[in-house]
Length: 254
Length: 364
Image 1 (cartoon, rainbow over the protein chains, first blue to last red):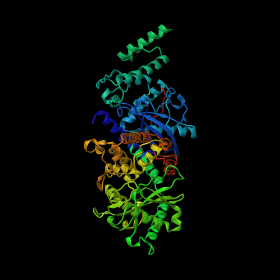
Image 2: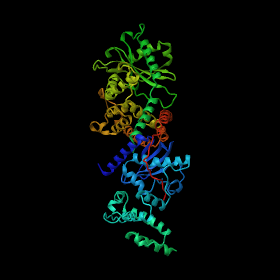
Image 3: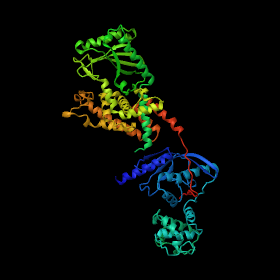
């Protein structure tokens, strides 16, 4: 069997498992020959003693490197307005199920469609229904943009200080983990006895470049707030080069 | 590309379509009553035929369970019957046999008004119900085993036939599934298997033949070189591998039928023998006119493409739209309507629980 056939079989298996619970979804191929799962997704969920029974028309695109990466999801009946406040990319209608790393990390717990839909897609749609009915997001929400990513990392690393987040993220962006060095969280322990485990875990889900991109966005955000900071103290070497380049460009265009 | 569930649903739709193509049970029972009455009339004590022990029995699609509703709603079902008389062929001519049966039928005032003579048979026309084709026949003593000799106005020699033998062969081709279905049906009816009439059982082979014939009727409605039913039925029965699922069966049958290796005999001549009589070649005419096999193959290609397109449809209305033009709006509509309430009822809202800390939505 070729790898392609293996992959097709895997997707079929995962889909059959998904469909045994969510029966009104079907597997199909889109115009570009990519696998999609589309149809009606119905669910019953309870939160805080309040139960919601609802259904949405959705379309999930299964990426070429599935199950390395999770699918992306769109709501197809235009029930959810396409804007940031509703956590939908306005350009193509993809739902922002969470911070990029959060989506990958949750998916990595069980790399299959059923788990993805139960843990992430239904959760998102339920939140939308819940907010429509009761006015609040049942599980909270992140601010959009880099600010939201920063919020996510603070929660993930359980740290309060913005710059401590950057310190940890720098290790991931530089792909430069050294267990014996002092943990940048300020706790005074060496890395392997502090944030070592979580860093080790999450570096499986994103590439250093992806961490770098997030790092730079957060850095720019913090720098705007506090220009007094000595940036060399926080910046990974690779990032420094990239930030300086962007600055020069920005100056020129001004 | 389709899933197991899509396939199951499609099989169900095809089965529903075949179901509405079939002669309804009430009509079937009525037909049996009618032909048994004809049998009684022919065998009455004052009948000249009485001494020849006339027996009427069904043949063709009515016997095989592969009947197909006519394309136009007003048209009647064709029911083929054999009228069997115990006479030695040396003691009677074809014309005499035909005449004997015809004149007895004409002695009945009701039948007289309905009677028409055909090339091989007498036809009783029950208006708005069915045509009953009654084929006078005598036993073929040279062959025995239910072989019969039949009359033909245009041919000098007695024509050979064996409808009972053919039916036995056809049932044999689907024996495994047939027995299973019959047992299941008996269980669902809480009846003994022996008490369930064979007629109530429909296997994927019978369903497939009905669908093939229906598609042919629509496809050749405005075209020449329509393939004859006996060729379709015979090739389908050969190709059938006792698949339990209708969709699987239909596809393997179509693929098997398209394989010309099975149809080409010696010297590249088309040869589709009657399974009960290898001397009879159903494809005789194909060797006289190349357009016949060509039309047959291009029809099967079209059927395959049509089914391929239909199963890929995303929803019931898509399936409906793609099947209606090739199998008929009426039957397809009924078949799908049967499915819709089932689906509406079965709409479920599965319960989903989340971890203590689900992801918070974000936006870039």
